[in-house]
Length: 140
Image (cartoon, rainbow, N blue to C red; front, side, top):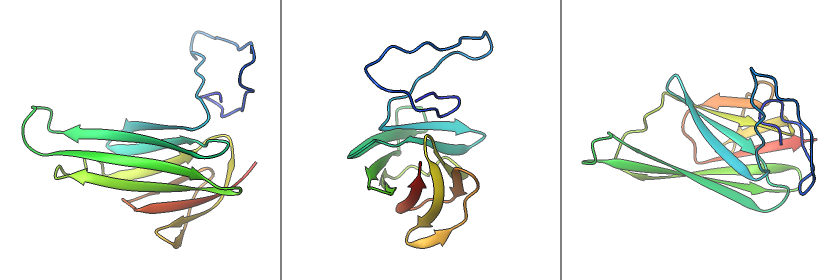
């Protein structure tokens, strides 16, 4: 999948991509969760697997090697028409972000349920606070 525009590319084939100086070609494997930070906001870029699951973890601490720490585990489970995004937290370090954003790539986001409550979303993203499970209804 193209990182910049979300276009799906067939695997195990050769592709030719433009490489202008201002945009480095970056491809992301389906079944990836890319966590990124921007202005104290944690963005989880979801590149859903075609089937099955994918996982990632984020480690946080004060950076001094002492004291509290935390591990945030994220798991995506693929269903026929959507995804579950499950978040499990470990450790005593405070969550270091003010907001969480979930950005879906390669599919159109139709509806979002956060901890079993319908939630608003804009285009292909949801913004909010910490959660335990999000269900994302998708279409191609």
